[in-house]
Length: 207
Image 1 (cartoon, rainbow, N blue to C red):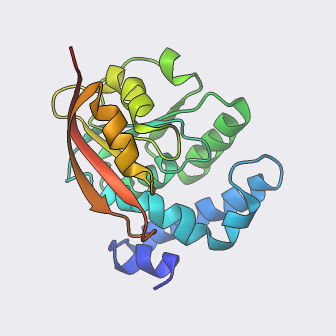
Image 2 (cartoon, rainbow, N blue to C red; image 1 turned 120 degrees about the vertical axis):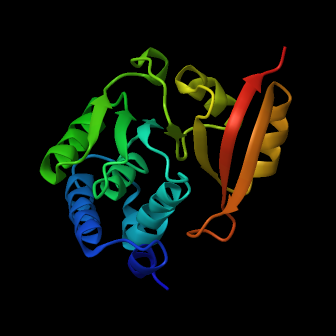
């Protein structure tokens, strides 16, 4: 099953939500010709490589409600996709953190055009406005030890972190556990047979 069909059928996405995803893909293709949002080669498989890979995180959010913080949002993957998925029931207000000004302008354009429940903090993650997140996500941003360091200021009791990882997941977990106590569950990626999503329910720096 190809990416667009998988998003529609496997994840149970409505026709309206699929239409918003189509509009986002159109904007992504248009803007990518001017600024480097994603690799040009990946646009040929945009639904498998980017949309499905991001949309599956929303499925793992366990019906939570509140603030979803997306670290290093880049082209809006997964943050914009999550905001689109959340549009139907407004379960989340999505905060996108992205320091690149050109990418932030693109993200704001998408939010405005699609009327998404999202805002942008155009700052480095370390300098972003502090807040308590219900869910924290980051895709292709940094190795797990660094991710936990970046996520810590936004985490509280009950915060869920969703981090897609590839073949290095075991090494990253081993390295992270040297300095962090981590309670996590692994989920098989729907978009990549070699991919894993770490669903981290709590983490604390070792003394």
